[in-house]
Image 1 (cartoon, helix red, strand yellow):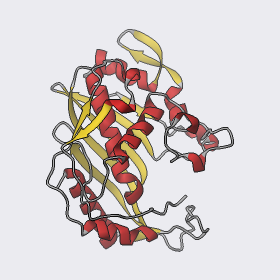
Image 2: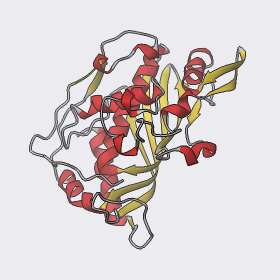
Image 3: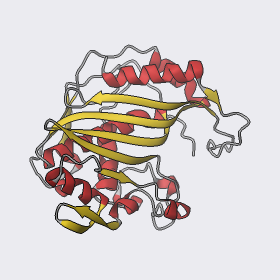
Image 4: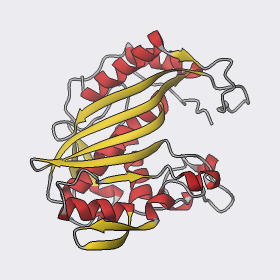
Length: 285
């Protein structure tokens, strides 16, 4: 069992056994047939992964292809700093895009905005990604290496407010650690996805800054399971996990974050439960 399996199973059991129901609260989300997408949730989840020892992948179902799509999305947001689905290889954001492909002033748009940051070299005009990389390389003892894309001024212009909205980067004894803050998470559709993509981002930043890979701490505000996902979650909880230790290999020794491509990444030492097939997962929007 991987740490990702354990965290997933433990969190899902906690939600099913002790979660709050959203029924009668007037939820925003809907299923494609128009009915309310209700859920059960718990408040304040913290899951930790030692990415330097094991890449966080669930083995309860097949994530061997999903991981590259997740990395593609993180590059779309953090590297391309795009808010246009035409720059993304998958179609996971299509439902939120307008006729031009824009999702509004969300995600990559926020990371691309430049600010006057105080650095050791004085005031520098940088976007949030380059600010993080600058401090990791030149002021790694700082406890202020943070990003935030939940920009209240621009919320009205976002087609979807950011779920994963904030990061903090910390260097301890030559290891780079990442804290990811997320306001809301759909356990079935997004939990494994988010942990994989931010673990990959951690590996990229560590390589660019000549640091070892440390831990990913994932803080989730509202952690939920939708009503139509409960039978699928129960199927996963009962599934047999694999005894493996996945690793992420990066076939590109660049120190320039903007040179990474999806095809540079490979997962090794991974296997999954081949008996589990969830079929098409309904998505609440």
